[in-house]
Image (cartoon, rainbow, N blue to C red; front, side):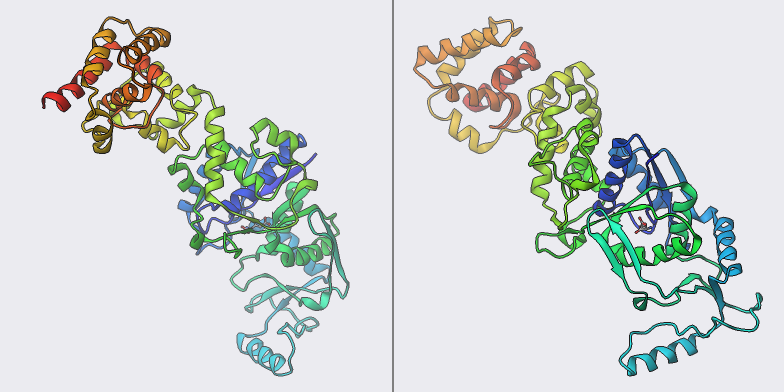
Length: 462
Ligand code: GLU
């Protein structure tokens, strides 16, 4: 069975690069009827914080990337000990007592000779290996080429000369990333490792560990990094935010997942994917070989497309976080009708919340420019006429209202905009908003006429 994992270190919030890795792992597991495991790599006790871990879990949940199982490296020390002891017993790892001073001196000499600094194997063959003397544990690096296959990068070859007897356990007893990562992948039965290609050198070391432990390699897919618009690796400098900040911006989780998926994966030129489509089409063969550039405008566009696809009821569930108390007092049914009039136009939930607020809260001021442009040019009489006609309508359907407007336009020889804009300003305070008839129907007769009268009074008798 396919098993993937996402292995964040809780040393910071979940950023979109990490999110993309999680998405690929999640989709690959789902696409293959497999399992997606979450592993919290919290061995760095100083830098790991509970606050970050909670935020990572919340981000993943919000995005809909539910995991089948979760484990914490900080609770697995005994397992790492067991594997390490086995390697030592088999002569594949050894304790190293070299002091900092010796290692620094060694480095200096190697640099003077023009060599890359590397450990010289000094403690490889000691007569005694006391346990009570401070030491690290190192791998006895085999003098063999390191080869592995990667879905994105093809066959990769590293020379053992690029590495040295690397440390797997520090002198304080904590284990190094490369070691715990491999042990956990073995123990959990991870079949596919999908992560950023900044890990390729780590992978070479990890391949050595798999060989020494006599275990089968997982399949690898190292995905190219995400770049900012200036083609440098994406960072906060480019405005890249943590996942939860995108939630605050009013992005739908499915849209963020869709956009991040496309940053590194293509299915023809398809841009918009539902969850079902993402799972159906995802495959490692379709991962892009070159880096993609993050573009916030495109993310907003993808979001606006998803805003049109989600049911108004589901939009409401998300929108509640953005609606103020006054709006939340209204019934879900009313809010859903309001949402329907603007859902296909708003680009984000923040915009939508702002644009439907008038359904719940009467405007307290009118857009100055709109008043000048649409109410100060001899439309008083037609507007008063329109008002009277509307008083006689029952507002139950858009067609009847359209007839009232058509009649007024004809009578006064006016274009629709001359009538619609003043009414729009009356209802919303603004010149941009939902279609005039649907807005009148949702807002209802009493409220609409009250607002219309108020505007006429303010402008013409005020
Ligand atoms: N904790 C590592 C990281 O956050 C995991 C890398 C991996 O997926 O193996 O980069």
